[in-house]
Image (cartoon, rainbow, N blue to C red; front, side, top):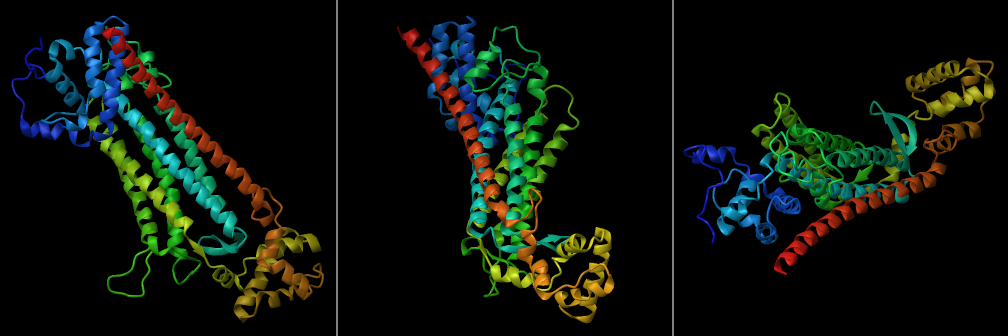
Length: 492
């Protein structure tokens, strides 16, 4: 017969204050981990039953409740989802049965575990979006990659490059972000369960079994470290911020390049906005908001660091404030990735604008200096000085660079006469690109190989994600199978 309802908060305190309970409660932002808490309780109870710490019949009743539990329907004022689920079990089964749910565990190890489970899923979801973004970058390279564009340093025209070279630079930076997230996943995918409040427990809990049932690759050995460390949250938000910095830089270039002063690209109407007062406006608002979200994610990271920096070991309720910042940072990063993917995949390039911008911009001056070194035996520094003098002459006298360059043989007897055909070949942006021989350079001949290598990375990332996701689904099925098998055993 079920016992009388019991408040699981116990009798140590005479009463609770509604205002104070509301202040310390995390129930409002525990929704993302609710299902994980049920799974954790299920795995923990299976461990208790197998160790003989809980009788099969009692444990089976708890498992049956957990398999049917719907945490989102919990009502009443609770400190957190952990309390809500346990209280619901006690109310339904009675304390003589449900009272074993928390044997050998604490909310401290449980919440640390639940956050890691949710983080795993969010990393996979985010990397799936990043994978699509990388595909969109390579699609741009395939479509517009051979278009010659100005390369910038200090936001000044420097040397010609191609759309492919520019966008592969984006790709490679983002790929390093992918690697950081994969490494984060490995470090986060360790189970705190069995650490209990901070010291471990005298209850025979098979920590490695619980970890395996929950899809973890191992345990966090030290019990104090297990419950009180949130460095994985700092690392996660740091990784998000590094990705956001790259997205913000890309967004900044889209904003600049879509302005009338540049006119290099046009943002699709779906990812732009008009003005409420100026009929002609087409504002690149999605890119602007991605740029702003970079600051929001940085704010989440800073908040978490500020919360953690002064905490004594081990658990303190301050850690509760870390979680909403973690989820907010991931949500902002996820949406930014999706919007940047959509914006880039629909971006239109203007080859004529690129070409006009390089007309008379001196961006092939380095190519001319290199040519002089090869054709006349001048040292590079001598050639650099002479070409600089020619550029100054072109600017001061307002004459074309090619015309000013004809005067080079007059500046040094070592320079042979320069005919128009030679100068045109050396000073042509597309021609200068073909002369590049160093690995990873902007020569269009390298594009095909560069794309193929990066497509292999995209496919490898996708395979790695599928393996991680498959492992989690396998663990979830194993947990359910184990629970149902025990219920069947008890029934028989």
